[in-house]
Amino acid sequence: MNSATHSGIREAIRKRIVAGEWSLGERMPGEMDFAREYACARTTVNRALQALASEGIIERKRKGGTRVRPMPVQQARLKIPLLREQVENSGCTYSHRIANRGQRRTTAPLPKRMGLTETGRACYLETLHLADNKPFAFEQRWVNLEAVPEFEDADLGQLSANEWLVRTMPFTNGEVSLSATSAGTALAKALGTSDGAALFTLERTTWLDKKAVTNVIFYYASGYRLDFPI
Amino acid sequence: MNSATHSGIREAIRKRIVAGEWSLGERMPGEMDFAREYACARTTVNRALQALASEGIIERKRKGGTRVRPMPVQQARLKIPLLREQVENSGCTYSHRIANRGQRRTTAPLPKRMGLTETGRACYLETLHLADNKPFAFEQRWVNLEAVPEFEDADLGQLSANEWLVRTMPFTNGEVSLSATSAGTALAKALGTSDGAALFTLERTTWLDKKAVTNVIFYYASGYRLDFPI
DNA sequence: GAGTGGTCTAGACCACGGT
DNA sequence: CCGTGGTCTAGACCACTCA
Image (cartoon, rainbow over all chains, first blue to last red; front, side):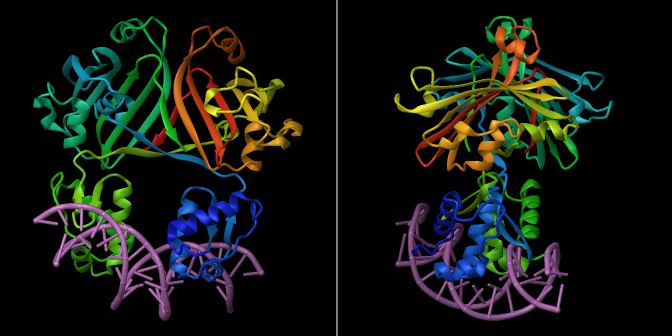
């Protein structure tokens, strides 16, 4: 019983939890108990238990001790790859076409999520992303030119807007929203599917401090799945 | 300049990265440099930098030092709440109805994802989840009775199958797949929407060690969105 | 080979929150 | 109050990888 490393101890304790050594909600041994048992420092046990807590498997409270969560939180780390990477990872050739690029003083249509002032300047862009020259995803994007003035003159021939922004513009926080959309006529035509097809949809808004940077909606071609481990 | 705590240092360094103090891919100061600068132990800096690395903002290599990632990984922690909690959090009353409960020797239709043997016993279940008595999501589930024999006799009147399994059955790993489905006639009827409506779809398979436990597909009623911060 | 991050230790003090 | 987890320190050794 000696892999006195934090990950070794973490997995050992995880197995004991799964095996049911402590029932749901029951108090587990304290850090010092485990430290004695595994013959290591308390710090090492602490790190292992903190990892399990951040996974939602156990709950820890000062003085209250450590307990097995009665109802574990189901959570996963979801990586949202760049479209280019998604396409290339599936062995296809990536390309993109700017479908529509405009600029307007913000009036009506700017997504509420961005919370822009009516007077702000913003830029609207539609891009079609292709895999082996077949439609893969359709992108609608607003960019707040007050946050990213350089975007106005960016050359998006090589780099897509998405990649340009990721490379150039950091952000401090954002929000993602996943949903399903029934393809309207224009969308169906752009993606080469039939009217009313169900499209997996990802919307993302990012902020730099409190200033909206960009809002984007990706409509993925029919049949797309976003897979990830849990 | 002295909150010599790992989170304080982490946020301070994050701000400096966002402010552009080091350009993309450029080498940042080492742990000992930061430790001197913030007047703290190297361990504390290490913890701060490891957190930033796990967020995908920086890259660290032994001997190679720490660098700002040229193309940060977009990732988020996605919490998948229980249906009951989703409904109750939106201020509605939750209920569910078992639509169909069967048991069969596994023959053809068992999802490939579960990787069950043809001879195994499994249980199939359909559940309609309601919010204020209106359809919220439709669930199709397979349960591997060889992994969870108790499920066969479980009383699912109070607790839904999902909650019963979460409470009773731990799992070691799983896979989630998000997609969009066009409602067929039966689905549309169950969810009270029109034929061909776009439904947000979540499929999840879980394993205990190498043994499949359950495979479930949730079809959410039209208009559902899964939101999370990034 | 040498510099960097990865990790462990032993000890200390603190903060929260049950009793 | 006082036990528990949360965190910091100073020092040490190791492992990777770049030059």
